[in-house]
Length: 261
Image (cartoon, rainbow, N blue to C red; front, side):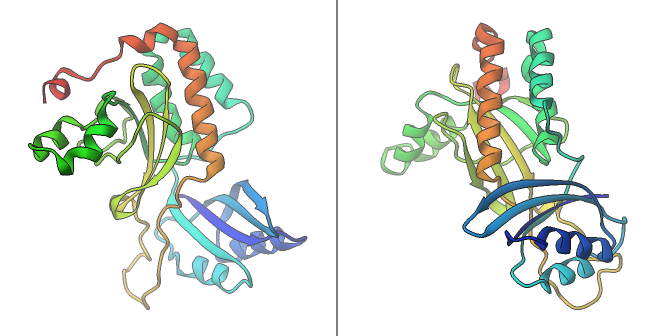
């Protein structure tokens, strides 16, 4: 299976090579390395590795934990190695070719781009943030909270049947930590109250500790939150898709059942 491992390590010559050797000794076959950040003598890297199915993750975490200055920020199962180097432009071209299915195309492709589990396009009411924040102090609080729920216009094939959505506003791209280890990133399209949501992690996506379930307890990090560079990329992709789709976005609305609720 494919694992995504986010590691913070010293930004000095030899650190990356030493970490790669440690992963290899543990049994991981490195598929991709993405440098997310380099600042103040530290680096944040994402490793996508092939990990033997059923093999214990203990030795992997033990090996990384024994390296001085190395911290594991997250481990989660990936659905594929995230692609770079022009794929965003290729995806936008696919959206432009068939704009009527543009949002569905975008939503289905985004999870693989961001090592995520699922994605969705939300229709967010214009006064959602105001109604959500003031629901505590107005009559009919429960009704206000119900009306303030965003509705899902499109979702990818791995999206939960009834997903727990974060509190989002269509103002700017940002990362959000949800309940039970779910990590979200959201970015507005800038029109029609549409927001692109990407999610990874959670209870249902935790990695088995080993093939037997026995052994000494060890803490397995959950999926890492979306890094600032990932949020910026998502925001740029969303804005570009909005420009490509143009007035087609204004035709998107909540499903009848959601709107009626």
